[in-house]
Image 1 (cartoon, rainbow, N blue to C red):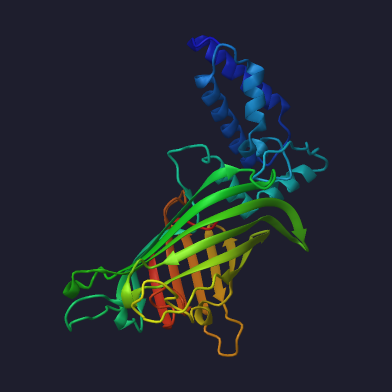
Image 2 (spheres, helix red, strand yellow; image 1 turned 90 degrees about the vertical axis):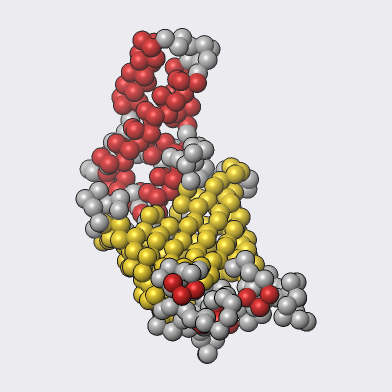
Length: 373
């Protein structure tokens, strides 16, 4: 293919015109998003094409891309790369189907797919947020590592979370699967505790590897866009008596219906040998953590207008339940909704590893950078 500018402009025009002529009827927002994806793909392929590349080659490549599948209405299995079926627009049914396909989780997955091939982009995993001000009614005085007798934990501290993932193997277990690496770091910062030089009281690190499968399953009136199976290690990076860690194998199923999203995540803790000496670096740092963290968590989210509401529940399924409850509310702070406020309330056990066996009653306000929805 010639690299001169007029030829490239002609190729772009021809490909876009061809795509528009063959595109089916979709909900307006999805069609516009898909067209932008298609145009961007065309531009990128033209820039790197050699002299032997034809317009047909570029068109075929861009139409077959899984992240552009919305341009060709399909079952919207967002992880696989599979051919789609055209939906006829009869009495507005296609438009309704497209709107149903624009469910909250699938919308997020489509957006993630647009950056999967961009090596300069990071894909969010769990929410990324900053709560500059949180208030914990009864902080754990033993959680702050300082020298001397003046150890004092402030009830007011900052809390933030950084979480990302990246796919590193496509189709390892069939066409609908992807293998991911993910990392989540959650920190508790005594930012206003000047008496002890504003230390980080606790930071939890959680790397994980998981496989995710896209599905078109339905359960009652709920869609199941994906499920995953993974292994995670969570640690607070300390040594000695302050060390906390555990390893889990988990699975997660996501459900959505209209404005509702549910995620059910059960797990099994990988057993460790008990310690003979609390200072021994080997062995179980916290043998009773299951009593407080339980064996599963259930997250429910609802979107109203541009407001997202979420509830997290954990339960150990015992009569002496020491579970947890968390309420999330995120809301727009500007007209475009890119800057979002965040209110988080947590009550229960297991908010952090150092406090896994301490009841925490915390209210925080701040900003969310990337949300669940």
